[in-house]
Length: 215
Image 1 (cartoon, one colour):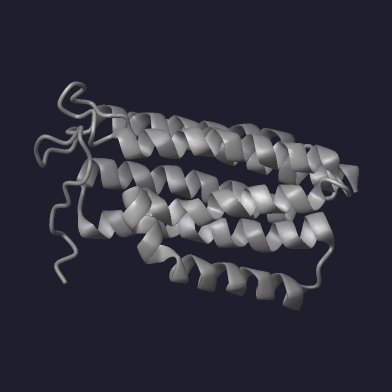
Image 2 (spheres, helix red, strand yellow):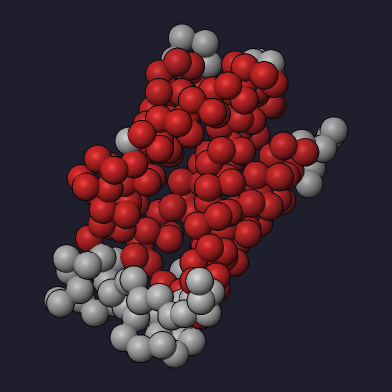
């Protein structure tokens, strides 16, 4: 495989130059802002919240990886874009099961494995229905299902997850609209996905941190 082969995926890219996707590239700063805001609050926590720091670091890496892809637009940069997102999803699910429900490590791992298997099984029908955005639908459902499971136990955490899911649903909609609106709006809508997705991750991190504070 040629890892340096150019990849042209989004509406805004008209050529292979570094700044061919200015809005898609610049809006990745939203992930760094989200990570920075959480880091400021974590710096005051005693003892240090290591799991939250790990998740916060992953959000920053997501921003860097996405910036690389939307500027270099190569196959290896695509991997740098999608891999941190996947790591965050599975890491958050594992750590959330531990913190929100108090599950043992083996039980939390089991839930993550089941989530991964279901995501794989649903991959083809979700891609057919939602295109490449279909790969994010299981994460949306995980937020909703986890929120429902927490309603009777920790309503504040549940409402936070519902809020994150609502923002994420709108975010996914803008991701899907990128190609359909391209003829009328050359910049597309993918950059809005970045802003709203960063907002989603910020909410998820705040929910995670506050769950420890409540506990």
